[in-house]
Length: 467
Image 1: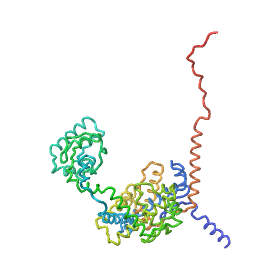
Image 2 (image 1 turned 90 degrees about the horizontal axis):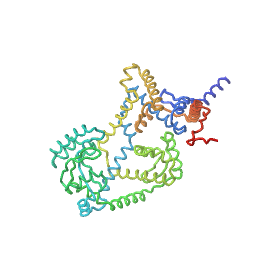
Image 3 (image 1 turned 30 degrees about the vertical axis):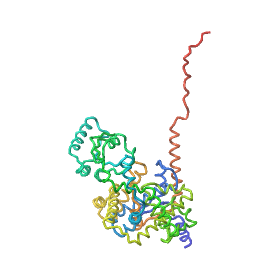
């Protein structure tokens, strides 16, 4: 009995020390992660190892969902996972409503700036020629000349939608909006300013290709110009609104907020379900979990977590206060009964399910392919695990592209399926990676010559003197 108890105690103390992560029945071992990191070009650091393991978990859970033919399209789960995007939409709608009365329009100033060319507007039709040979460009020139022969003010927008290869402006009937003088390439601006409002240019060539330019009249862009004319008064009105919101909202940042935010920036997975209160306001509590959700809305534009690791305390406090203000704006939106319409919600759900399908296909675990190769669910799980591991190894060694798993999808997967990180394993994985890297470096040094062959003395250009 004593021996049995000692054996059980030993197992308890040593449990999971050989693993860094599990996802369903899949395991990422210390040795494997150490080998992968050590052989890669990634820095050998614990936070890097954790990031790599986090990606492995998301991939394996995606594979598990595919094996179970789980489309992850439960509407409630998707909307809960996408709450930051929904909250942003709702807050933006409220902000648009409340800001309509801000600023003072200056019709005379707007007309003067437009007439003088200080502010410009343009619509264009573009056929691209970048990288083309002279004969190819000549063919495009024939096409643009044919378009120019038939385009008028009445059909310009429709023609731009059908023919322009500048997809962004084509969707708006060729409109490039308002812009200050000097913003466009010189050839384009010269062609535009040579026109009177309402005129259409001949074909203009720039580095991008061939353009047909229409200069709108003041009346055609009046609304945009008047909105822009609000200028400084709009900024003042916005600052006043936010100052009043913060004062009445009674925002209070907690003492432990700064070290907590630094810690979550280093290891967001460890804080994803943490309920530490970072700030309070009349909108309620801003918790660590809630802050991570808000931060995820910024990830497309900047690696905000890396920036927070180095940011001074004042910047972190300011960031927390700004997200507390977001919560106050959201509370006002809810009080005003601002709603996301069904079309917008449907679009968000579609983006979610499309991202799932694309990730499955890229990782080689689309449900249809798994069902073709394996009949039972258990066999499909085993097949998916193998394919994910194979792809993951190639990705870390830069032989396959990184497949992003959007945060809402990762949240749904981690809420629905079993996974775990074993913190003690990461230190050992980093040690293993260092050994692998050092061994590889030593091998490279050993393959280099240990001695340098001396060079012959340089030949002198001066002839030797005779005795």
